[in-house]
Length: 191
Length: 445
Image 1 (cartoon, chains in turn yellow, orange):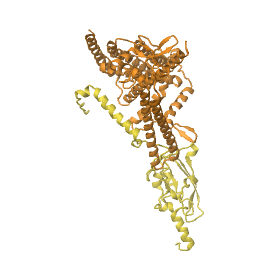
Image 2: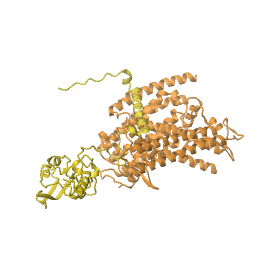
Image 3: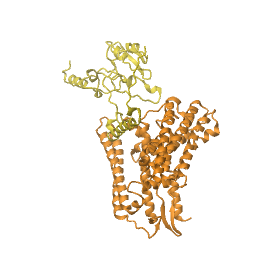
Image 4: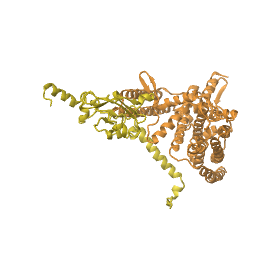
């Protein structure tokens, strides 16, 4: 059944419309004056001079986590590419020289043009090897090939860009925990 | 022809081009005004890199880039259009935009001593006794551009836009004419110069004919195809209305014609109802006798304006300096440059004000013409320049009103426009005219 919305009763001055025009003009002029004299009142971000503040949990471009020896932590189990609804992850596995690890990715490519940034790969990974916390939300390139990121690009990140409390990132070469472990190793206190 | 005559003719010819010169300013006003009303900063990205600065010029560079783009685009003619009319149509609004300002008095008539006695220079390029009638006639021609263009486009959207435009123009032309007619009854002349002179001698038209002023204003919005009466374009219904099939420089001409029409309409409202070049207590004689003081006052106001702009620029610079994660250097440099520019301009104006207060002391010649002393030509020209400034200030206020109203009121439905025009405005105009006629007759006898 259709819902009947009663029309608001207009007063005489509202029906004459003319006074209301001036009220509207006053409102718009107030906005114009405010934005002119106080640019902070406008919520527009002055991109690219001012960059947006990306929250910590924003699902941005992926990165591959590293072991302390700078090799990828990925074991090429294909869990992420299986979970991927967009089928944008292309992995080629090879035998790892370390027999404790068994497999490692020879190739790990993500086509960012196919990716829907759902984060299922991060959820699926059994060893926390893939994350989406780079905060690189704005991706730009000249051709399609630029958007296919390979293993080297995915592992090209700096532990300095991640908080000191991020244990996994800090264990990678260049990280605080990594440096601390190296010190301990040199002094023989490492266990 | 004397040298002075040629110079004055050239100046008046230049004044005819005022609407064209104001178009970039108007586009800027429209874009930034719209943005500020909607709490946005507006278009401010296009920049000219020069001397290591990226000068954005408050968004004026966008106009430049738009112009370059439109002029270098392919001049495409749809295969289904009727080519002769299609190509002529965009020129018509521009033509009327050049012709109509030649009728508007931009300054008071100048009298100066020539070899063969005192010569009086008319304030407009084409000073006709039937000035306002000629202006109405020429102004109404601009709708031909719209109608012809829409018809020749051979497209249904364009044709609908043209139909609406023509119907609306005809409806509102009536109340526009009747709204202004009251004023002519009071003044007793169709000459724009004598209308302004009457207002200078008595009171402004808005005081004698407040209802006529409102009628005229509303009708002018309809005449210019502006919100809330812009159904001829009606983006939400008709794609782009009458100029749907137009692109490149032909579209630019339509746009330019529209903005010129706004300037001319604003100047006309200012002339008819706000005293034109006249300000209260500042008629031509008063300006001439206290030229130094008046010039100093105007320059001081200009200086304050420049300093206010410098203050705004300073505020924006400070805002960038405090923003985290921002590229401060380039912007700070640019804002610093503009701040320095406007502070210098403001100081120059202040200096000019002091100088004119001390130095400008015009001496009248020992000649009388039509009950007023004749001044040397240079002082008369300075007075005329001040009066042009007054007209332009009033014109710009009404231009801003056009923009302001556009971003305040929603577009009216087509039938609402028609009923407002025929059932409300026309009746008010007729009653206003009747009452004015009776009172005018009673006062006369």
